Length: 349
Image (cartoon, rainbow, N blue to C red):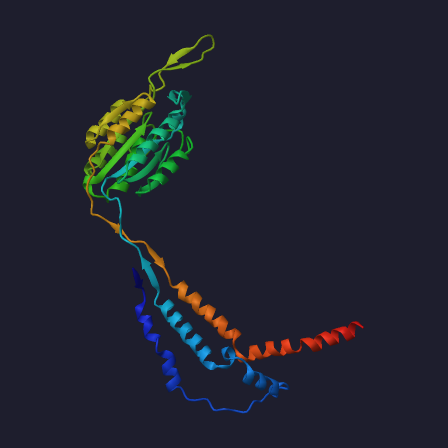
């Protein structure tokens, strides 16, 4: 449907009539400029076709141009059909550890040895793609924690920014408490039944201003559920000086603290030792029941005012081309062509 944003602009429609009837008539004066070809112009004006000679054509064009201008001034716009936004879901923040230890190559993906962060990008990216109807946000943390994306329905942007995140951009250490504190700050204004944080890390809190358990208590006060995931393999073969040896690359993983964080907030701690286990955990998180919110609708709007405005400008150009003075000039130039040719021939001779 078409709506007019400024319909009161239509009040200017009778303005030309008011000017025509109320304005004082201009007195006719003798021309102060003597035109040598005045008789020719008069003769031309009296013998030309009605398209130029008759004033009613110019008046018609002027009326149409004025109507188009008034129509443009009312700001017509096309209102599309209402589109329902996907608002049934939860506010879900994803906190992902990108510290230096996430570069450990103890994971296998697609038959090839790869880093922990590469697996996280693949698995969490698929999880984001499936969360249709949720507001998703992304928090990245290392030595510092920062919000990469606010809560949004745009899942493609969240996944893209996660996949483009380089290793260690937030520092080489791990600030789990600061990440939880930032999540509490971002979720505290959202509906209480709707706040979820999924925190993934492969280490222990060794930097930051807030202790993880203290941050978890603040989250519990705000009714924020935290699901913690400890990621990393239990064994890894590395080359030695004489022979290969097996080490535990997840020796520093603080399972106790992660479990306590989940218990304090009513969430759940889960351990992922491979890409398959990590994917299974996020598949289980998909089973969280959505919380219904107020339905929101959106109606696309497209401005149409430039159509009548362009039409008015086109009519103005046509009226300018049909002006008697301009047409007389064209006629004079056209009539003078034989004389100009003769003069040109004489000059060349």
